[in-house]
Length: 524
Image 1 (tube, rainbow, N blue to C red):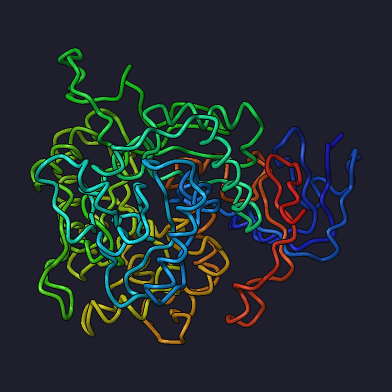
Image 2 (cartoon, one colour; image 1 turned 180 degrees about the vertical axis):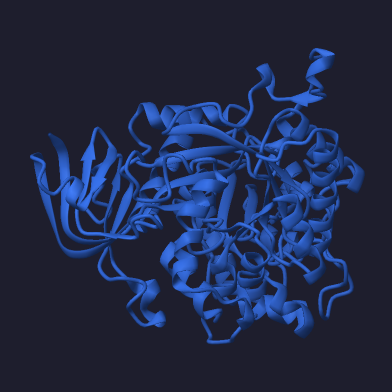
């Protein structure tokens, strides 16, 4: 007897052997059959989906759950365009703190909306003895007041209170870590938001690190969230590469650096596991710190690397030698060169053709880099909603020649490079359906077409957020398609993305999400 049979639906299985079905059977959290294989079987529960469209649960291959959860409960200045209005929000947040010397965090900072960066002097006017920390929406910079600058080690670079990349990390290091309880609550809050948009599995893009880490025991917070039933979806954790330590392992192991006890990709189970090693090579386009081979249009610089190229290369190579899958953050084309050089060197030293190394973002990939990515078997984990919401700005700073190379789609597929969809939530909108719409339209929110030749089909965009996402996380044997034997993770939609007008895809209702055969009812 089946636990559940879902019927009267259009199941888009993403499985070429059985692409469309009308009935799906579930037993102990797994799919046991489709259509005639289950239609006549008795079931404890029969759910009539009333003609809905059902897809495999969306997989967000690059997300920041803890950051998202904290941001949802942090005062925000997002959308404000006047410095005085920003300072009024900051002053209100200061007034709610208990004592001088407290830290005050503000979310939603983006200098583009204001026309200039805020300065420490601006913040000093409303700080009232508090330490102010305004996180840039990109996650690659912050603005702080003089009270914070005075605490930084000598030599930390800043521009009138704006700290980028590793300098930002120095400011973060001044603060006490979040407690595991607070982290677990934030993680659960963000996970529930993901579920409302049909995301049933995700990869947390970097725990424990200088840039995005929240605690040196951050993995424990995810375990706590799971133990307390705050984690309603599947999560894979990328570990920040700066957590690797030199080790004196046996010579035959060839492991120069590792996480304690040799922990690496693959440890865990179907609900919570350790995934790739996250390596940061550059910054972001929003903060103008993505590392380019030619300067930004209208600016006198070409971004920055996170470290000396040889140091970055050594970190990537050592991660590969320690058995990790690599998730290398590389937004600019110069950073991509560093990443590809290092991966090629690592594979030459110790070939691991099944490693499925990934370039996270692949924000600007030159035509000459495409064949090399294909040859190395490196996947591209892109964020289509970056161009949907920030595309006008990004196109202006890249210029006419480079703008079509941003966050590619068609070129990756044509070269045989795995195209993987993700959000980088909370940097951008997390909706997979809105990302699918952009991948097909290649139109920003204003209607500007950006790299129209990089458009893909609806089926290819859905594949990027299901099958390809599962493969990128080494989940392809259990997730990504509605195939017998795989987990019954699926999303029920109010319409079929393949049949509605492209402009409507992003607005399709997410009716319900199932994880392990259980409805999560994200809209309740």
